[in-house]
Each structure stands twice: as structure tokens, then as C-alpha cells.
Amino acid sequence: MRLKDRKWLSALIAFCTASLVGQTGAAVADGCQPPWCELPGNGYQEHGTWETQGFAGIQWNFTDASPELVVGLRRTDTRSDDEVVGGKADLTFKLDPKLFLTPTIRGLAVVGGREIQGEAGIGLRTSDGKPLVAAGVQVPFGNAGANYVLGDGLKLYAGVNSLVRPEGRTSNGLSASCPGGYNLVNAAQWVRSDVVSNGKTCEKPQ
Image (cartoon, rainbow, N blue to C red; front, side):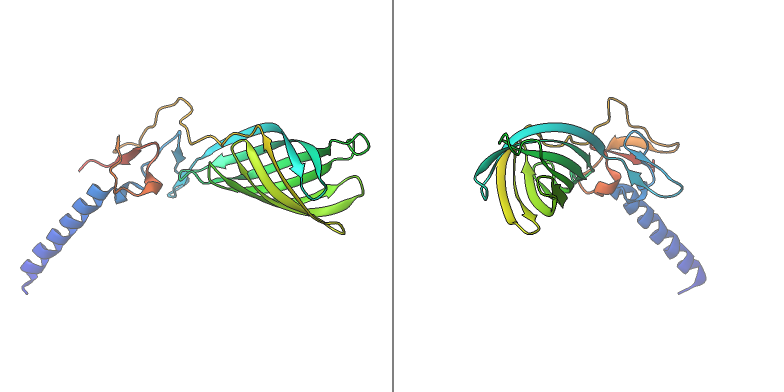
């Protein structure tokens, strides 16, 4: 192939590649701006929605055959794909006058989606100073799980509480924007989810 022909072929390949990238949105990974994203250096990072919820509930301890009052605090971060991560702290009080002032204290990690989250952590039963390992699940207005108390075995429970599903991602009333040289457009279905916020993406004009 002649040198002149090779140059034309190279130029044609470059043009087709640029057109394809522009159409699929793959070239706009660095085009997201606040309120949903930021550009730390040349990188890309999406912001989720942090939320703190206080809660109260009633649960039944199946192993001890006793009702319990639960109060606590949960803090979660909802990310772009509705993945939820966070933490939870709670106090469980036996509805027994002799034991009410000696609650079980727990700290839990929270991981899951907006509809259901898994929980796991450690705690302390203050009535006798015994440590425990905990695991469970939380859905809107309900929970179930188990505490394994060192030296006293497994304590199964289920109950209802005031926790609703974590908030979805939000613009907090602000407007999305793009850096210079980009336009804010509706994202097509084939555009990668990591460059889409609230159905919008930043696209470089052709």
C-alpha cells in the first residue's frame, strides 16, 4: 500500500473511532459537574445521598420469649446504582422492670439496596457484660436477625420499627451543569451508567 493511501486510511479510521465514541457517550466520563459529581484532578467521582435516621421499634426475642424496645440511629449513603452503605447503632431494652435499665448495645455495618439491607457487627449485653456478634436484615418498617452472645448462645429476634427505605440520589434542588466545551443532554440507553446522573450526561459537541 502506498504511503499516501496509508495516510488516508489512518485518517478514516480515526474519524470513525471519534464518531463512535461521541455517539456512545464513552468520551464524556470527565464531563460531570456538581451537584452530583466532581472532577478531582483528571479523575471522576460521583456523590451519593447521605441520610441520618433516628428510629424506634418493638421486637420479639424468640430465644428468651420476651418483648424488647429498640431505639437507635442509622446513617446511610445511597450511591448512583441505588447501592446503600452505612452504619447503625442501637440500644435494646428488655420490657422487664428488673432488666430494663441494662440494655444491649450494638454497632452494625449496613450494606445492601434501598429496599433491603444486610447488617453485621458487634455489641455488649450490659446486664452481665457479655460481648456478642450480630447479624440481620432490615426492610422498610421491619427487621429480623440474631445475636450470638458469648457464653449464652444464639438469640433470634424479629420486629417492626420506624425505619423507612434510604433516600434515593437527589440534586438537592440544584441544577446540573457541564464544564466548558460540553453540553448537558439526556443520556441515551447505551451510555455507561458511571457517566449518567439523574438521566443526564455531559456530551462534547461533534
